[in-house]
Length: 222
Ligand code: DX5
Ligand code: ZN
Image: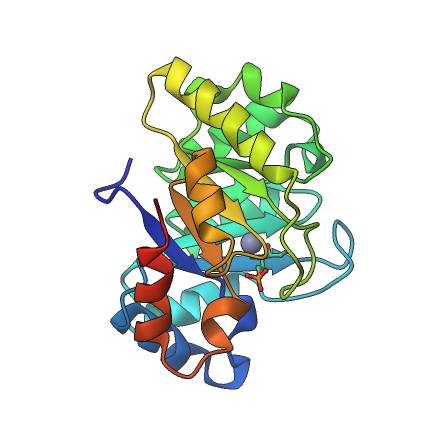
């Protein structure tokens, strides 16, 4: 699905929201590949963030790079359509937040937008089996969703390996993304387990020199 082997996707949740447009430009200029856009509804998760208007505002501000929208919302379908109109390139959602997973996937794909499924640390993978051929990305959460700055949950590595195998067996071009607690100590563990797309929020935005941080993270991928 993507031109590059490894993708670094800074989570803007950890950016300075008062300067969001410039933060996104800075991190992309510093070598980031995607923009990871966390959407929380104070219902599916106990926190509230940003919606489609902010995604459109970034597009209007001149952001042309890939916007990876991570929906932590219930229900999924209506806001997913709003994000497509707002310029999202990929929308991923948590299967337990949709009553009809196959329908939600295809409602996104029908609009020429890429789609992903997200699994929390305790969410089983069985919903993936029947739709793996329909999706572009699997996102494994290595923290419980809702907040940035949490510690990496090591049992997620086993899950990443399991999904790596499922993807390889499918023979499809599906990205395997990991999200939560990714930093210079954990990114190598996640890549070894099979991840190829890495979300990092606080590990990037809480540093002074984004370029140096991103190249340091990239150097730890193996
Ligand atoms: C958590 C979000 C993550 C979060 C990651 O619910 O989905 O994308 O921003 O933040 P860090 O990298 O600080 O764990
Ligand atoms: Zn996320």
